[in-house]
Image 1 (cartoon, rainbow, N blue to C red):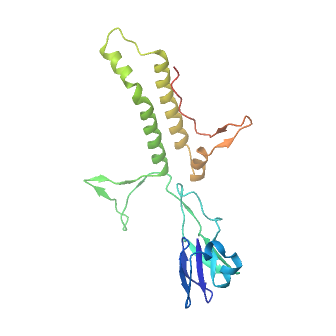
Image 2 (tube, one colour):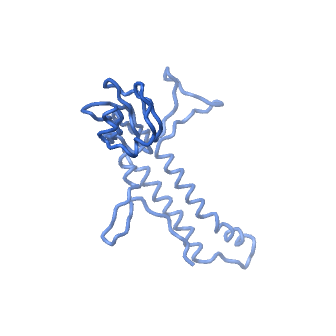
Image 3 (cartoon, one colour):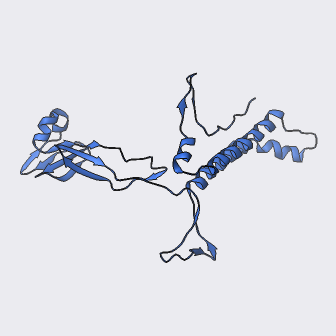
Length: 203
């Protein structure tokens, strides 16, 4: 991505090579691939440098004040201080601090913990669903028993689901929650994260 600088001010952005008019001169799109950096900068076209110092994972933070500056012969894209997203659920209130109700029921602004636990529940449900028929059959057919490996798998899924939800609930900061999902390489070359993984069904 490029920016056009005229009289030390950024006047436009260029997302892809295209014909462009600077001053009273039209330049063809090929200058973006054929001209050197110094040649482009001589007519005021600068490749944008990204400063991600303040940028944080948008799944956990709200990144603020995106801005572009031209200083020291360089155009830089940067952000202001990121703010963590809501960790816990909160009752919704209006601008006067009064509870927000819908059909007489308090509206809840859900936090990251609830969102993450909802995903865990959905994953557990998705893993259990293909073997639900075993359980249904066992209730309808008197002489049918659910295979031991299926029973073990279903129990393990629920155990892991509960473990994950407990670990999520125990987080007191957004950084703690984020760390649960971060994979690191182990001595044996595998990658693991603090949050447990769901089991697989063994045949």
